[in-house]
Amino acid sequence: MNQRRNFIKKTTITGAGIALLPNLSLGHSFIKDSQKIRVGVIGVGLRGTNHLDNLLKRTDVLVTAICDIDQNRIDIAQDHILKAGQKKAKVFGKNEEDYKNLLSLAEVDAVVIATPWLWHTKMAVDSMKAGKYTGLEVSAANTLEECWDLVNTHEETGSHLMILENVNYRRDVLAVLNMVKQNVFGELLHFRCGYQHDLRGVKFNDGKTAYGKGVEFGDKGISESAWRTQHSLLRNADVYPTHGLGPIAVMADINRGNRFLSLTSHATKGVGLHKYIVDTAGENHPNAKLKFKQGDIITSTIETSNGETIIVTHNVNNPHPYSLGFKVQGAQGLTDFDYHTQRIHIEGTTEGHGWENMDSWFEKYDHPLWKKFGSSATEAGHGGIDFYVINAFIESAKENSAPPMDAYDAAAWSAVTPLSELSIENNGEPQDFPDFTRGTWIKRKPYNWIKDTY
Image (cartoon, rainbow, N blue to C red):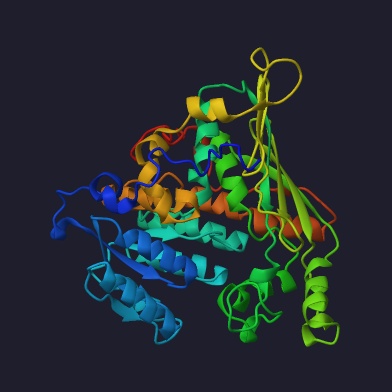
């Protein structure tokens, strides 16, 4: 396994970095300061700072404002801005509502939101109402009402929203999407995906170190444990569906000639978080007395209007190597792929009834974006995909055009959370998916993903 070529991590030119190709990879050198898009960042924690760094590497972006209620994170962000050669940004964060003052700035054209989940919809709605081109981290919404808020605000204001789902730009994901578009698998029938990733060291810490130490959360935790763990305590739902579902939804043309119809969900018992607390801090720790509502493994099955099924798995409270578990099954063949498994079987091409390694397939169907930018994108984070999602956001914002993943996608993908919660509460009862496009999915054309721009 160690000697196998890893398509996801492979680059076209080994060792070449963003600094070597600034104009090719990160913008247009002919753009003058007055033509640069001006961006505000709301939330400059670990994820927000990653976005900030990728924005600062572009030649067509000025970061003019930042917002966070943690002064330490503001100081770190300002340091990054100055080191990138830009002027200090205007700062907002005197209270939780101060982001609205950032949104009122005329010198902000677009906004990136990377805050805790409960703030996502509220801030995105306010941003669109302020006329800003809005980029929103995942998941976009927590309730069906919030899903509709995103769609309704987009339609009422005409302001665009892009859900910043970076996994859609993974190299293997885009190659398989290219294969889907070229009908390699034949008529599509079934998909699998999900989010399987041991997050116990993320949901708990010692209040000093972000990851991997201690069993504190909430007011006693820091970083994601300060807010993310509370969802596991109070909600029995797939609270993080978009990493797996986003790429599959694009392959299935959801909201663009196809749509989600219904969902059923089931949850196992929840023992993983309690066991982690006891194993780490002992059974007498106060948190060992808590009863976490979220089941350890949540399985949802989605039916589409075109007759496909999608199985989505959420498993983050137990030991599990990172896996999104992608499978695409068509009438002509299938692929089963992720970081550690990359295999394919195509009838009439693959010999016998076994699996075939995907290296040659990935080479043949490598996506135009990765062919063009692969050597320079890898420094951007998460194997390069963070470059592509920010690139798509900025290029769309510059044109003020509909982004690849829009408000309707943000609503449909995020709706899995409240619908799975309802289904589990009602013993797996099917839940109807709202049609967030109000029927226009029938005539909406799929976004042209197979191009080398964004």
